[in-house]
Every structure is written in C-alpha cells, then in structure tokens.
Length: 371
Image 1 (cartoon, rainbow, N blue to C red):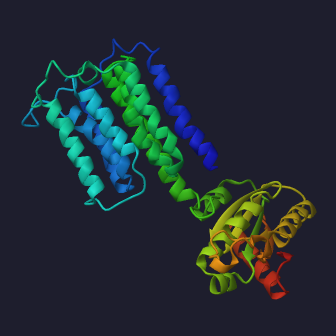
Image 2: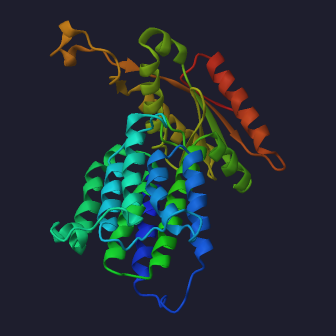
C-alpha cells in the first residue's frame, strides 16, 4: 500500500506540472485571492500535521502572494537576487529531517534565511555590478542542480507528506524556464503540496505505523463495503506478553512486524492490524475449506519462521558469534467467521473473536471456526 501511495504522491503532481506547459493558460487569468487562499490553507494543514519542512517551504510564497498594501514594504519576486536566495533557502529546508521544537536553533536559522529573502525582495539589498553574474541572473540549469540535491537524501524523509516541502523547490525550475504563467505555477505548487499532505493524513489514519499494513479504521471501512458472505479471521500472537517481559518492547515490536509481514502473504486475503498483538485477515469469498487451507499455510509459516530480532542488544563479549544466537519462535492462534445474511460487521468480529478465544483455550497455535 505504501508503495502505491508513493507512486501517486510523485507521479500525479509531476504529470500535472508537465501538462501546464501544453495547456492554453496564458489567456486565462487566475484571481490572486485563489492562490493566496490555497497557500494559506496549505500552511495551516502543514502546521496541524506537524510538517515543519512543508510549513517553512511554503512561507516565502505566502508573503509573495500577499496583496499590495498589506505589508509596509513591497516584495519584488523579480529582484536579481531573489530566485537564487529562495532556492538556497528551500535547499536548506529540504535537507532537514524529523521534527524539532519550533524554537530550536534550526528553525531560528530558517526564520533568519527567510528574513534574508524578504530583505532582498524588498529592494533593501543593493545590487552591485561587480558581483558574479550568476548571483544576479543565475542560469536555468543551476536551479535543476539545486533541486536534484535533496533527492539523494529522500530515503530519510519516510513520511509521504515530506514531498510537500519539495514541490516548492521543484517549482523554481518551471519559473526559471518560463514553463507556464507564474500564477498557474503557484497554483500547481499549492495543489501538489495539499495532495502530499492529504495522502500523508490518509496514511496516518488508515495505515498502522509500526507494521506498515492497514489499520483498524481501514478494516472497519472494508467490512462495511464488502459484499455478503465474506470471511473474517481474527488472529492473536500467542504469549506476546512474554516477548515484552523477557526481551523488551523493542523485540516485541520486531515480533509484530514479522507477523504482519507473514500474514500479508496469505493467499486471497487482505491483512490488517486490529490493535495490540491482534490482527485480522479478510477473504472476499471462497469455500471454507480453501480458506482454512490458506490460514493453515500462514500458521505454519509463522511457527517455522526463525526470528533474529535486530533490536536485541548484543553483549560485547559475544561479538562475532552471531551464528550461535538462538532465534525466537512465534505462534499465532486464529478464529474464523463467515458473515451471515443480515449480520453487521461488529457481530462478525465478535464471533471471530469468540472462535479465537476457543483456539487459545484449546492450546493455541491452531485455527477454530465460529459456529
């Protein structure tokens, strides 16, 4: 799921940006308040989602989009130094990772660099003829080179909405090449940022952050939209508390990630994390014997999987003896229920849970069918 969301998050904005160069937009004038409203809305969404990089990346364009007369000075985006200063500012923002206190030194640096951008745009910075011409009129390829640099560190970003801070930087390329009217490029930037932030909020709401599979909210939505007579299997990690008590919570997290990975490979099923150490598998249709066979394959795969937790602390004296470490073995109990005519999804979950309890009661590491 995350891979598909990443493809949407990058593919759709890039296709929209390419389309700007081929659409007859020069005869159509966008109202200024539309772009300003979208930028302001994007800033608010980035702030609420704690996307600090996206917030700081959008700030300069918020000031540039303000109507004349609101600020005590006039901002000129065509000042010789402004494009290069904006690109440099966005480069610093895009090289930042993680979240920090709003009053940290890094964000103070962001405000300082933003102040330099506004200082130059307000014509307070004098233009000297003996300065290098690249500073006053940088070549187009320089913006491409600057925009490529953050992509080498994209594997640090992790969150889907992190691209919301990159779109303003990429926007400097079509501005330099006059790819489309500036108002439309600003509109594309705002919509692309909103799209990335929306996908990120969707990911946080419907995808479990620890295991990477769909979460409980996604399961409930799926059950509401499925046709009749689907199958629901609830499963629980046996003796999960012992993993946490004996090896620590980090090893417990490794166990949950491993179980999520293995149940995601169940044939004909969609995997979900229900909560804690409990998971769910949904089968749209099929014969009960075939579904039990799929669950049995998954049960055996989990029971036979040797887990060597990455997060388990290694003793200094045992270095170089990794092959002598004993793996952990996980077992899982299943409770399977089929949706009956007129039965709501909470009732199906309740029956599957009762079957899961019976599997636990009968010795664990087994599959029980609900009546």
